[in-house]
Length: 242
Image (cartoon, rainbow, N blue to C red; front, side):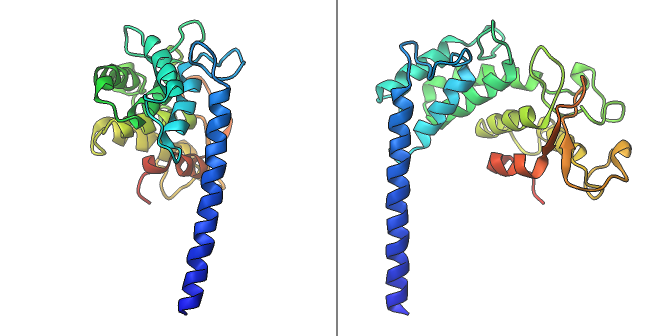
């Protein structure tokens, strides 16, 4: 038994070493893609703070836990911060997708655990909450069962599971209380998006085939069929209790 335990520990150690080496190679690759303005890659959307934020989150979550003392992280953060708008959103106005970009930027900045970003994050939090489709934005739980509680793109008032998932991940990172109306309404939106009679209280969704898949919801039509379970699993900590 002791020999078996030693072998298992050795095997786990070898796998961890290999995984760490792979992650470090990934970090090197990402840093090598950085442009002078702090963005990464050559696509037209590379300057979007959401794209930059994904890389910053990856670098900050890497085995080296890179922070602003790393030149690549510092340059990327400077780019993200430069794009905060007066309304709190973090986005390139010419490219849109305000809430997507703001939410991902928030997740990245929060991961860095730098108190200097608190004012930026507070403004961004307020903006994200304005993107939720609730009574204040003219949506009612009974009249708009497929949209109420979800998060829109910003100027486009249509919610879907993907956009809402990023919004919830950002709000979770900023410590939004789980008993707050905003969080409860978001959970209601997710449950009403899923084809599951046990959890979905929307009359129009009753009697389906209970596959667990979901429409995009939102005031402007669906966004294809998305697996709610997959979306929540990918988001990790934002999943509601079973």
